[in-house]
Image 1 (tube, rainbow, N blue to C red):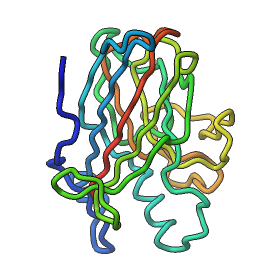
Image 2: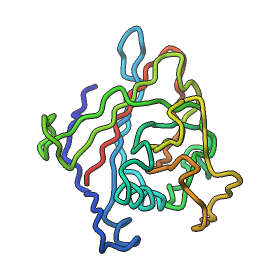
Image 3: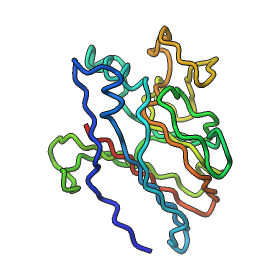
Length: 210
């Protein structure tokens, strides 16, 4: 089974000072590409390519980064996977921009590689408006029945530490929360369950176009 992974995304991210939130959400989109292989044979066990939702908190993170490049300390720096997508087991509810955390996170990890790409999909030696964030979970990592994931800008650099808003009940969205004290969920996606065994390697490429 062969699949072309490097494609030019059709949706673009636009962070403009005159752009309102509703316009920002309609203009922003990312794409994630998931591939799971048997660690021994290299057999492809699962493949997904799907668009995701940019959360409301992304606009807050962008404003913070524009205001002061030293706060927050991190931009997008980790990917988290979980087992808590809401809705039917085989067909979870569509992701919602009000999501502020994974419902049942089981693992998070820093990126194995982050690269700029040209509009043609080639790796670029200079900054462009397209960035690929690549994460690899080894055999012993992220084992479970996965059905949700998201990119994070974390308060802590430790992958063992979660700093989500607590308490938080979806779909409420409190605009008075001080996000400098919490992890920011930048993108969120739900998908039909994928069972990640301890014999497989999971590689996820998350592409953002600005």
